[in-house]
Length: 65
Image 1 (cartoon, helix red, strand yellow):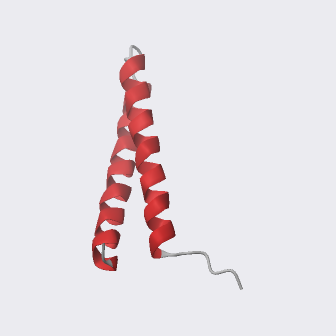
Image 2 (cartoon, rainbow, N blue to C red):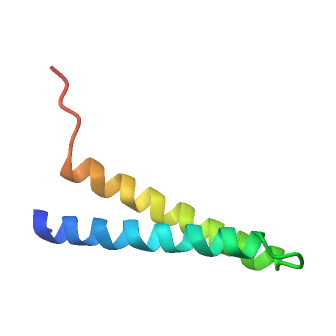
Image 3 (tube, rainbow, N blue to C red):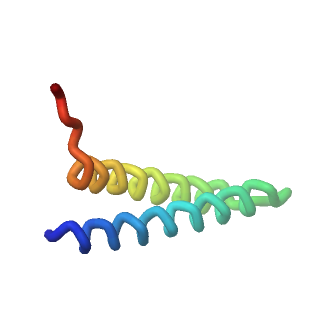
């Protein structure tokens, strides 16, 4: 995959992660929230965060001097 495609995917995943964060906070803030739905959103958010980390590692590898 070329760098531009990786950067686009990274930007899209970061936005999706932010959107999920807002959704999790909104759902958790309700008095009778669905625990299972909340767990699913958090799990998806974590999977996206892992993918973001992998893409960042590809785009910005650690240079050990």
